Image (cartoon, rainbow, N blue to C red; front, top):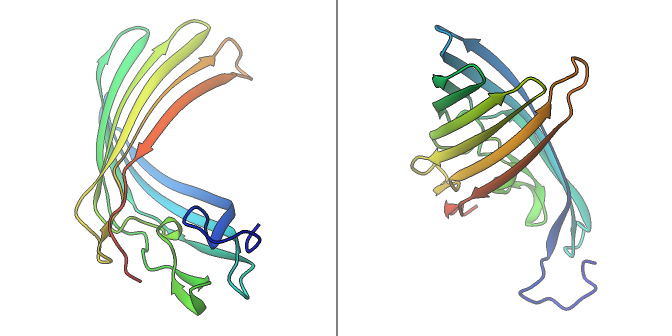
Length: 200
């Protein structure tokens, strides 16, 4: 309830209430062998965030951004396999093609200002994605586990670097039917703090 409680260091003058993000990826793949694959991934991002605020004139406002994100070149290698299971490892590079200069009308001042980190389309740095996955296929079900990480390199031209991230997940899929295959997945994601600061 903005403005209806005393200001303290435990509440905020601006609060996001709804975030919507869509990512459409164009993927080009090439498999030189059965065990080795390459992928070029180009994401198009469209996102918006609705807010409430105690700032006059901005009691409710929305910011948005859209455009091409960071393009990635990824490789994956199946280094172990048997009749029912496979191990794959992957590494790649993410190029800073997504904009970190998106602007919008925010409560800082009327007109266009630099949008927050979360509304930018890219990291502004070269990043290294890493992946390790396991797949086990049985007659009536399959299960697997994945580990993914992203290592940020250097700082961008706005003097900050997004935090490194890592995730681990495991999933189970019932495969007895061709037409419907229920599945369940459990995932854990962690990411580090931003290093540096965009002063604008």
